[in-house]
Length: 404
Image 1: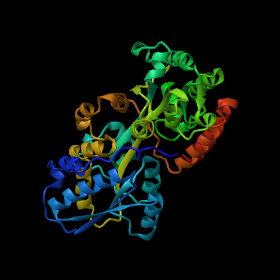
Image 2: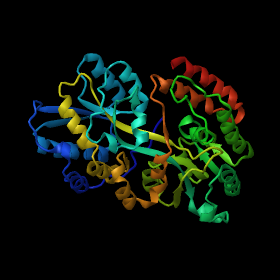
Image 3: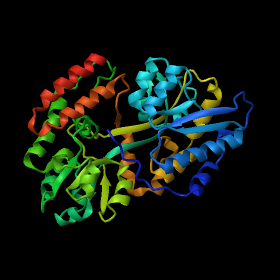
Image 4: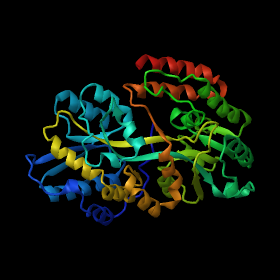
């Protein structure tokens, strides 16, 4: 699945330089045996690459330790090769869909001793915690919200009072917005978007202890039946039905009046569809709860690193409030540390709905090989308009239970 971070505009070096100027405890000079650390990243573009380089250079200036930042052409492949050769980078980008596989193989060092361990959002720590050990330092995250075309909203006679707070209200406004050749709601045919309805109905992929896969539970079946009802009455379409690659494209091309997307949509709208006015609100409360999906970015530390102490200090610096706020300004991500919340909201009040999701969002469970199962789930969901949801969920349930 592709995430659309790359559209966020490159800001000046001065912005990042100012952000990293603040002193944090982990960056203070100290005696060390290391002379160089290696950081492998999978960059979304020049803005992100520049931000990481500026932050690393500031830490190097304080410590005298060079940080060699390598931009991977294929992060997963290069990381796997590094582990296989016994010579991995000291630190590296790590997604929570990868962490369980590498942790099980013994490739990752636990990070509970990070100085800022308690400053991360609890949901982000949970995304990288396996058997009580934190195996990546959260660096940023995104959540999903409901993105609304303001012109279409007004054209249907709707106001801010009509922003949907429940599933019934979402269905109602989707019908009202389905007019003039535009469908009310569109989104990707995949768990990574439609999974929000599972959460909102009290369902999920795995049990609390991650030993059981209740994918085909009554709650999940009912959640997808709700989606299928909207698909059936024409107030909602999946992006494969519209012939577009993702919800942001369908929304930007005015094929749908609402979409379910993450905060990366801001860059796409600014660069590709600047004439479309929009607002973002939280996804509606389902029969059981609020719910959204969370996408995490983290820093891992190689168990084979010969410079763990210095690498831990570097990770603390890279996930400090000042650095993460600089990254937010540079390439649009949300900081992983709670202390940056008020400052980020002051900078980006229009994205408050995305940050609000941090309080109730769920991440993809850190289970080895779960990405393969979810890939098949996504394939099956493309046929949801003409398929019994339970048939799809039964298949995924069997596949997921097999790897637990």
